[in-house]
Image (tube, rainbow, N blue to C red):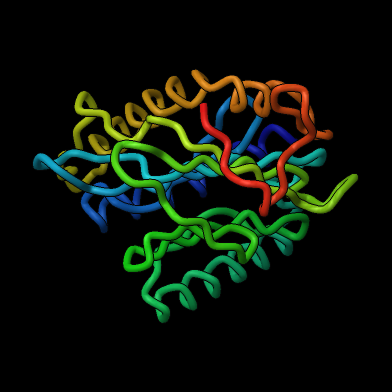
Length: 223
């Protein structure tokens, strides 16, 4: 039953990402996973025709099954909360995506004009050039500790091998393209030791180079 619930939740998230890609010609926010960690990707169209860059990636980690809704009533509340958050974002002129459940608020907003990505009501400036902002969010479910964020900057933005093309009405091509994007980006992200440790270890006191995890005011990590 739990596997069925997980599959249903992931299917809804992926379908939302497909719709975003179709609407924005490659730009948008789509959901995925890296190992056992949930991920949201902020994609931008840029440069040569039909090219896509990864502006930011947000990795969410917790100790519970925070992304899984328990039953139809909770699922309905989750959808209503996400619909409301998306409408509010549209009014403010920002793009939004992610997951909101009874256990966690894993919501992402991208402000194109301000060049910021916001999680947990905290904005982060996007790096320039071919760099990607990666936000490692631990304890998103508030289990064991309050949520904490570690910003990392990696050179994963440009990928000239993965191109976007307008999908046919059945959407099959865009699904394959999104899977290609995610596969390339996952490989690049896992090239960082900080990201690998975050993905491979359980929610705990996150360490980088023997130190405890950095808080928001302690700066940006680099690969």
